[in-house]
Image (tube, rainbow, N blue to C red):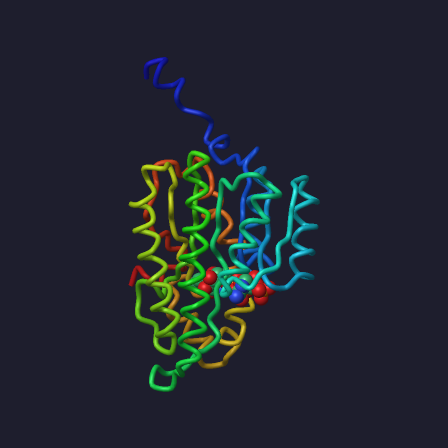
Length: 265
Ligand SMILES: NC(=O)c1ccc[n+]([C@@H]2O[C@H](COP(=O)([O-])OP(=O)(O)OC[C@H]3O[C@@H](n4cnc5c(N)ncnc54)[C@H](OP(=O)(O)O)[C@@H]3O)[C@@H](O)[C@H]2O)c1
């Protein structure tokens, strides 16, 4: 190997550093958003935490600060575009820039046959998971373009790529997130903005507690997951750090499945 080639290769651990970076994580009050925010802080990022529950955000902010990083909390209902815009403004006022956006807030409030889904249920899922994701990413990307680039991470799902009975609307919303991710990546590559999606399988959070604890459906999910169990939230931390950091500097427009093997079948 020539000196020139070896000189270009930093330590792989350096590639994962987020020292000096600023991250904005939505849905950071609990679940995957909390774990992702703490992982980014562990790697050196200051973190803006956005969700509706002020008390829970304050607790996560304390956890960020115990890692020696700055944290700010912004309460906002992201389905309201005025609140979404104000939240992003507040983060920029505090941090001046956002290097990493994790568009994680999402809902999956129903588990029912498609023939029983109501219009209100459709609207709630699509508004939170698709509309808010779209306008959050476009708002931040416009500013990232001015600052010279960044990394955007969306939360898709294994339900983006496999049919999931009783989750038709959620699956459609997450398929939309996957497609937004690909299109954003193509539109914004020239601004040095990378856009990738994490697609988890079943992870034990508030979102999945009901179905994982259900005697029939919980067992069916374990059987449908080759690794035989739901994932734990911290099993999403590594992929989030990879995508946030320079370790993934040549990856964009991709869906990263972390699903215990479901989509391999
Ligand atoms: N858990 C899984 O198995 C799984 C699998 C695949 C994909 N995902 C995706 O991963 C993401 C996180 O899921 P999770 O399991 O961590 O869910 P969770 O525990 O239910 O947490 C959802 C987060 O989103 C926030 N949120 C929801 N609606 C919001 C709104 N209108 N405005 C602002 N914040 C809102 C919640 O905060 P507040 O209630 O405080 O607002 C909370 O912090 C979601 O996009 C989900 O679809 C999860």
